Length: 356
Image (tube, rainbow, N blue to C red; front, side):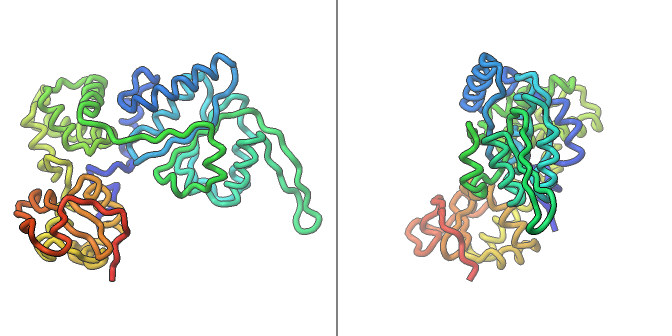
């Protein structure tokens, strides 16, 4: 079974990426590439907080993985010259864990809570009071004799990060003073990310190679940096001092990342749709069996990119290949006057697919 973090084009973080990513992270808003709207909004927020000499409002960063939420949190701490404490929703198993972290914060400290949508419900309820009144109630004892002792907290800034903002309860969302949504990068921005990363890594790279890597990076800086390192490895093994376009195409072909950023699993899903099911519609579990993967893998790993980029659509009757999907795997789509789902190639649907 192919897991998301095993793929070169996965935006999910890897353990081996950590050291490389830390070396490439920008340390100020002026160094941060892309997300112009969010950068300008955060700049105003931080500048105002510095003028007031007070901690910034609580900030929620949302968006797909790999776009720079953790980097922005670290930049916030750097810009505010404040210490930062980093944890995640899955690491907090009960309210007591969160209470211990909150009670140990210093005045003005930044608490970065990654995957905040996975916070346990009791910890969420504790966080409401901490964010609004900078106070937590510590319960001493059990049963009828239990007593809640209020504990005053220093003023801190909570920076929450989530890839699924819709899973956050409204009371928690409403307590953030500012919410920023990060969008996918365009190809020029990704090219600038690659150029900067290559300079930091001491690599000499041709512009054509930068463009080639950028076009296959799915608009995600984390993927771009990973693919750059794979091209670097390939060039080093083959004795190239300069990363050329031929190195980029050969290396990425070896890792099965095509010119539009699709990998083996993405193409397998499209080929199954087109060649085995005549473009669909087909249920999720049937499609997963056809490509030899779990339904969850197809739905959460391959499908989001294919749907977002117009290769595949979700209809009430099941998954269908769009005209672009047909052509990408080397097949001509059905005629425009065909009946059924294939007659509406290129149209994406918001409705969940049925697996009946």
